[in-house]
Length: 199
Image (cartoon, rainbow, N blue to C red):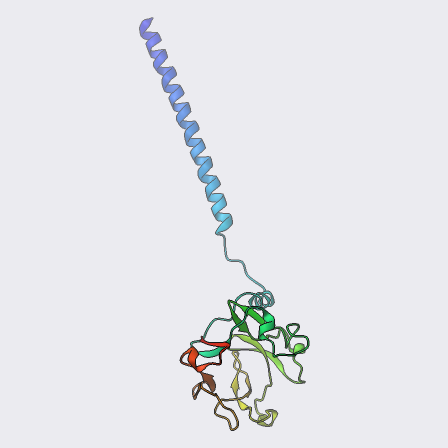
């Protein structure tokens, strides 16, 4: 009888231990499943963004990425600092939707062709910034001097562009870069007092 009680006692202890172990395993499994579920919610497939939304977001967050060309860029505290003095409606709708981000002026950017003030102009990205440009492919007379049909938008459209080495264009203390046709700087000492030399 004592032996039976001993075996029953051991059986009860083993049963309780197994049940406890199973419960712990179940709890661990539930916790792992919850963690897996929450991580899959946060690390699922990338969300596809509507191109228009992306353009809208890029117009309101941070300047466009640099392209390795150093230029004198106007510094600012508020968007108004980026407007030409006395310009009515600036900042405002294109072509006055300049912005001030990270202490630097961001140029105005168009969102659609119908925002361009000149008939025939198109809204195309040039060096990452949506800009109204005059297409000139096969029509060099479409450009008004000193601009000439020597520019290209980011999608390969030939557009009118005012190169820094065109007659009547000067770079001041900056240098005219023959490769890009842009006035470039080496340091902020080449720039006016309210500008800095940045990419």
